[in-house]
Figure (cartoon, rainbow, N blue to C red):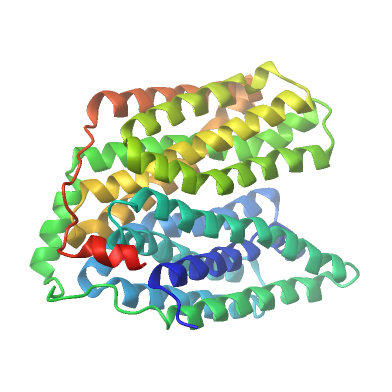
Length: 406
């Protein structure tokens, strides 16, 4: 059966994020503890892959502008397929950290390049199609902990074997992702030539000096700052308020489901009604939700806030990527998406660290309120500074006609 390039990208994204998430949730902290890691060492190992994202996303996007999207997607697929096998040889914590660094390169390359590829394929429907791609990756993220936990449950009496079984399953998903990536056709058509290094350098400088791209990326990073705070400290806050572990799981799962179900809808809404108002409303809604958490202690209101926070994530993230694609030229779109990936990874990583310091001194409530202040202020700066630019036509002739086929 012949699949469209867009559908291949979505299915590839599902298996990529499934494989990546399966390697860490819930197996990574358990495997690290099995190797003798302290809680601090577990945190350090968990942060390694995020650091890879911060360091590599921008260069990956830049190289995709220079060498083409398909080559970089194939490079990331090779890492997805090979990295899980290395876990089976790990015997110490430094080995595990090195493998996590190598594995983190895969997602750091794949996500910005795939987002740039989707943006290249579409113009008028860009927000909606980015939303569908994100939903596919969220499905992989949702399935992975269920599969990983089930495998570990089967080998509960032989944990070492269970860990290896999870990583072999992770490798199988990576191999499927590699096979799918081989079916991705060249994504640049017509007479467009590959950029030279001089042109690539000029495109890179144009992106990193573009105020709209920087502030839009920062708006998403501030939301992920709040999200990192939410996902890290909500379980601990829930326990102190007497909620059961399964209730905490429902709170987190409901948010992911809300995000997955609404992103295509919100992406289509931004296509028709504009990106900036949607980002503004989503950021303010997110700040109100996380800032209100300390006011409630029972399950139902916390569930409502979790769902609304998931909706705010959908509102913002379905519009920010599309707006950055709108603000960038096709020749520099990979760099722009890479810059977004780098800045949002910084925000996501900084959230738990900064909010954790605040919470350790003043309590969980202060940590949540601090994240709300960061999100609200950044959103208002974005709203007062960034001007949405409507492009009258796609960046290359016939792009819309090609998009209709995809």
